[in-house]
Length: 361
Image (cartoon, rainbow, N blue to C red; front, side):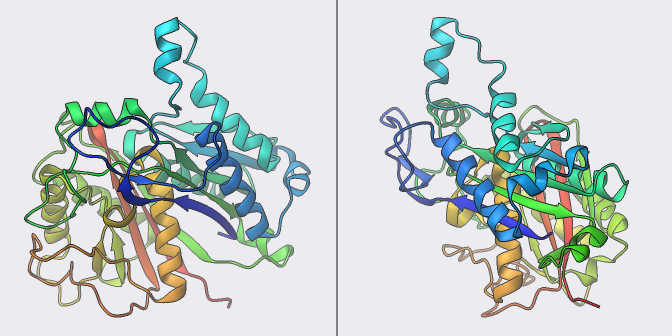
């Protein structure tokens, strides 16, 4: 991975749309976006930052032709005009493709555009797809990530599911009461090692392995024992060629809902049953909210930042963790060589990705 651009908000009162009919006004809101289409602006800024960070231009990418592809993850891919469009009968089916094409045009991608809408695992799935394409020799580089905007459709939808937290979400705590929805985007430049070295690129980290799954249990509720999540993590570890005891950090899905947090804790307990060494586990959603289909991409960016800086991703309101083995207890600093980032979404869609800090050999 040779470049990234990420944008996320902070949990605060929402001014993007009217929240008076909801149980909360607290959402992960990005400040300073223009007055137009917020999703376009998120994509423009994150793709531009990705190219700058990778020391590449859109012309450089374009010159690769089909050897560079785009992988785009999103759940809603809608702006706040969507409901009005629906009421007037306007065609909204192409909106997801519209935003992906916009990202590809900005990046200069001339290869295929691949879209993942695997619910809240979409962003992680998109990055895993890019990884698979590159290691299979189908392309030499890829722009991969996702973006999601706060919409009334999402807010009122999760309100009807009784999934929203009344205050600030508190993942993996016995007092958890739901999620805060967030918005944001993140894109990464992935390259085959030979291609990155040939152009003298700075390398952040190496993707070692990934896995996707589906527990086929329920439309919205996860399989409660964590059996499928456990096997997803095993599959990712097997793909990476490492054991669970190698991991220094796991970024969990950690929505703050009773069902998700309990399922994940069950899966993690099984993965580390009898282990002397356990990684630190936390959820970025405690800080920025749940960014829907883009969450996995944004969370991977946060993992890479933690890997670089040694600053742990903390959950500030956690006081009574669901597990008392210490895996949810934040260290003062963290030295991450190996990390895993997990996403568990509606309808059982799940994805996991494992990275290693890059050390030039």
